[in-house]
Image (cartoon, rainbow, N blue to C red; front, side, top):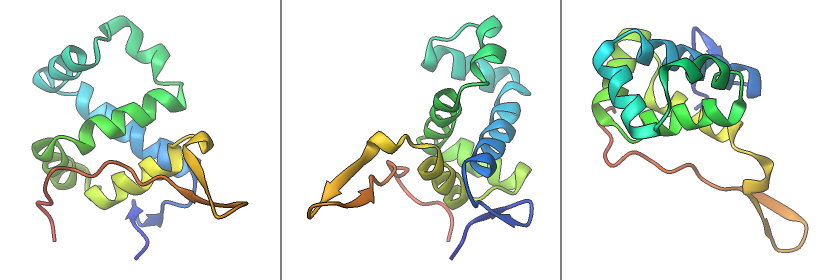
Length: 121
């Protein structure tokens, strides 16, 4: 099953970045969420805007929410972005260096780290 957001399939890096930006906007729109995010990441409020232009930062945002079941649930309820769509976006934003060789020249993508438990069916 292809995961979607806003009625479209997450087809590549651009869609994955769009998901990450929406998730980041969701985080920064709530004082408690942004304080927790800043505490965990060690970022400063004034550096978030500049950091948001980096695909690596956006990947980090998605990995951050993928580890927080309550945040995933809130994003699903408010933004209608399913946890599986977030995981699909993580795969699209993961650097190609995360691809490891398998049997010669074949490559497979490294699987993203999954949340601790699945709250959604």
